[in-house]
Image 1 (cartoon, rainbow, N blue to C red):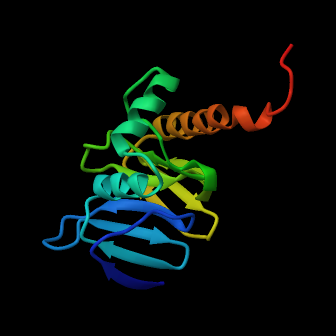
Image 2 (image 1 turned 45 degrees about the vertical axis):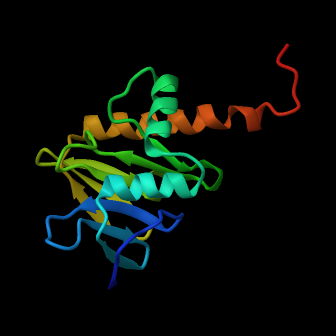
Length: 161
């Protein structure tokens, strides 16, 4: 896997994870299927910038999804829902250990010594600082968001009576 550097990054279908870094220049490490990218933006800045690129803002997404889920804690973000790009935080986005993961890249997850190992479809894995129970809740919460946002496609043209 090779490494690139960038000032800014836009989340795409290839994005697997965004990890906070504590480096004088690079604030994020982005994992894609075949490379890693060191980015000068913070993870939240990447999320917001990407949401704006696709027609909303991070705050707008948090507000809308928060209303759907009836919570404003650890809200999954539909960055580009039309293309299946949904990012879930492993903890509060302000937590220094928060990692953002792309829902459709996650293949498995299991707890290992109070952390959770997340396996991806490209064969790589990542440890995140959260319990399996908490991760499972986030994963299912993101699935609920996807289902709620896709109801209109499922019932398009059908009478519900």
